[in-house]
Length: 424
Picture 1 (cartoon, rainbow, N blue to C red):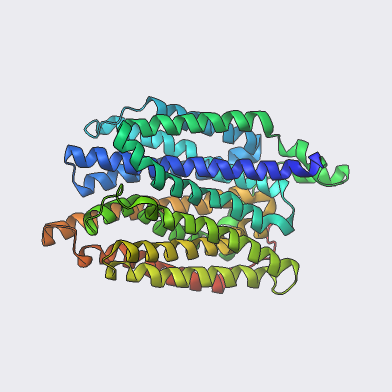
Picture 2 (cartoon, one colour; picture 1 turned 90 degrees about the vertical axis):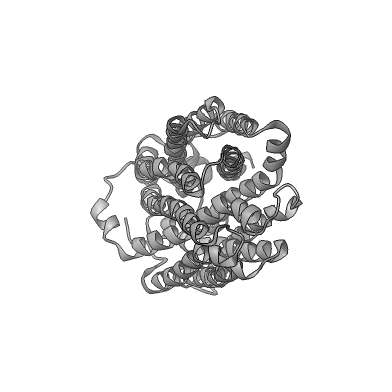
């Protein structure tokens, strides 16, 4: 029983890992927004600082996949957590010390950039094919639970203890997870024999570090279908994650503290729909109702098209309830779509899942750089022409861009994706 339970423990720990990472990301946007508004910084400057994280994050995606492939995801995860936790603990939050803030956010971005390629490398070797959708969906749903908890708890922490307290709390969570991972996680090579009664030849093949077929990966249409959808998913997610607090406070004239638990609903919805998508995908595949390819395309298409409609209509709703409902539908169905494109790495390239994840997540990170920074510039331009940001017109382009990107990306995935293994 213990041998079987070990892979589930790994999945649970990776779930907690992603939760803590997103508590950190949401926490910084909340704490920094409060400090920056108090210091009188404009929206463009806020957007530039908020997007700095993603420059570091983009730089370490592919190196993260390579490092996980060569030295093991367990070690890479532990080192990255220690680095970003220390950086958060030591960073003084002063909006006027731009160089220090930029340097710290770049470091945190670089450290967290190693995490998801490493997780996919670990899961590809630990989890059998018929459990992959559920395992990846559960692990990635930790992001949304972390974001939900961050939105629920951290504004009160900022109110009573100040913005700096958020960084210390996040560093403590990072240190606690690192201790758990150090104690309970083991290398994939040690774990394979406890999962399956494989022979020595197969075991050696699975845990060897073969030459990476870079050219084939970078010229593969199915890989590019994953890349495009990863870009769009993260464009929408990062814009909402970084700018929803500003939209509620300036666009709708609401206080985050006064909104209570409703502000966490978009991320809680992502948590629920991500796991629903994983269960539905595995059910369709194991019961042979649909092929792997059709399952991935079906869930990706439904998720992205419904999300596109919800994103486009967000500015039309001028109440707290309407905005929360639309953003919840948008993020929930985007999370459902992850049972399509986000698991597809392990379908097409199980031996190189970390590498392909690194490549596609680089695109997702570029979406963060472009989307978060562009949104700041769009809002600054809207403020210059309308004098404030309370009108729906000021926010229309902010939400329409990811909405139309969702429609485009869903068609790309329909045309070019596959659920078949294309890399040996």
